[in-house]
Structures are given as C-alpha cells and as structure tokens.
Image (cartoon, rainbow, N blue to C red):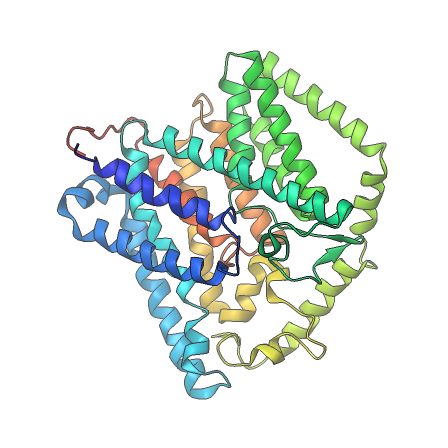
Length: 410
C-alpha cells in the first residue's frame, strides 16, 4: 500500500507533537526529545526544499520564511562566534542557545499539509485532541501531587524544577498549543450547528482558563486568552444571536469568577508589591544596566549564565516575554525576531474577511500569540517555539484559502 506524502508528513508532525507536549515524559528525556525534534525538523524542512514535487506546491507560501530564516540564522551564527571570541562562554555553550531554532524548519512540511485537501482540518483536529490529552494528564499529575502527595510522572511534574511554586502549589506549565486549542474551540462554537459541540467547546475553553489560572498559575495567559477571544468577537460584523449568546456566557462566567477568592487573588497578583511582579521589575532594571555597551548585539552569547541569572541566581530573561530578545540579541536581533509578527498582521488583515468562517480563529490566535509573547512568555523559548511553525504556516496558508492540492498527486 502506497503511503501518500501528505500522510507521511502528518505522521511525523503528530509524533513530534506528542513528544513535545510532554505526554511521554516518563524519564529525564526532555533534552533528548528537543535534540531529536531539531534533527527531524531539519531533515523534513530541507527535504521539502530539495524536493521539486513538494516545493512546487508550497513555493508561493514560502518566500517570507525563506528570506527570514536566512537572515535569522546568519545573525544567530554571527552572535555565536562573536560571543565565543569575546565572551565567557564556550562555542558549545553558545550553540546550545541556537539548536531549537531548527524547529522553525517544520514550517515547510506543515504548510504542505495545510494546503493539501482536508490537511488543515486534520492537523488542527490532531493538535486540539493531543493538547486536551496533555492538559488532562498534567491536571491529574498536579492534583495527585498537590493534594495527595503522590509523585506521578516526576519529569512532567518538575519540568521547571521543584522550586517552581506559587501559593504553596507546585506549578506545571501549559502547552505550546493552548492558544490554538482555545481558538479552535471558539471556531467550533461559532460554526457548529450541533448544540453538543457548542457546549463542549465552552467547557474546553473554561477548562483552559481554569488550568492557566490554577495549574499553570499564570495571570498573563488568562488575560491574553480573554483578550484574544474578546477582540475576535468584537471585530465580527453582525451582532447575531451567536454573539449575544457568547456575550451572555462571558458575562455570567465573569460575574461568577469575580465573586470568588480566585478573582481577589488574581487582582492582588497584579500588584507590583507581589513577588512575581516585583521580580520582573528588578529583572528589567538589572538587564537594562547589564546591556549597556551591548545594545547592538545583546549579551546572551557574551556573558555567562551565572551573570545573566543575577547576583542571587533568581533572574530569568524568559520572565520578560519577547522583550527579552532586546537584551539577549540587541536591537538587530529584536527587529529580526519581530518580523514574523508583522507578517501575521499583514496576512490576517489582507486575506481574512469577516464573513470567513475562520475569522474568529485567525483573529483570536493572532491577538493571543502577539499579546502573550510580549506580556509574559517568549514564544522563542524552548517551551513555546515548537508551536510557532504551525502558527506561521497557518497564516501563510490564508493567502489562497481555495487552493486544493490533488491527493492523487501528493
């Protein structure tokens, strides 16, 4: 039986999705998984570029990525060798900062899948399904440890170390596809004709909110999810019954939420006097002083990790979201890392019409991705970067939503 190329790519991508969602973290293999992902991403990406049959079908979607990836990797390797020649880090240490960027080559097999018949639907279903499994698994592990003191799946539980605690509870991060899942459920709510699907979509969205607030303990993610959903709803043209129902659901949930202790704790957590917010202010002051003399190229590849983590070892660049790229790679690097966000805005504005069924998905995902990247989570961090090639490929696929690639020829 002949395996279609689309199916082969989809199988590889779904396997990597499962691997990077933490579902298989039964041993201390996360670093190995990341290196494996880099190797396979490079093989798949280069394979797509070198295959005339594949590249002829995706060429029109690849111009921006081709140019951007060349610029990005030239800059990164200049940073690596510049830091090695003048800084405190070894060449191996500096290269360790770069290898996860090879995950961006997954853009090429993903865009091929998306432009094939039913490819977009199949891949988004797979992402949402496996993300739900991962979040449920993490929730179970979190509950067992924090309430029953059972250490199940140790390396999933302590992904960020045993000190990653808030309000007395061990935290477990969300997934790189949590935003895709919530936006996918928003799409399902708006476009499904089945009441059961609408109810299920609302339940999954609320579950994600609860997970972000309780298990992940990230106020920033909650704010960005709500912001993304709200902007997508408000930008729709007609105030139909679906929008009225959506507003009512949000108002009811908000009213209930604001009457709980969770909300009071949430508001108190926004104060600069809290440990989390206060630490970010200290980090910003420290890194602003550290970057003096390094504004052009940044200091990530020059200074040792001990110096970057601060005098008591508690400062982390990742706490500053995408602003960390200014300190890590300087003004030039910051501009290069911002280019994909400008591309997303350009494509969404040009090709996503309000009457399109995917409007709420595209707008909500774009707003969420941009806002969460700046507010708290650096999307180029190893925890989130794996999801970025899919997001970039999705927006490039908007350029011709009617395109069909014959499965017989695929």
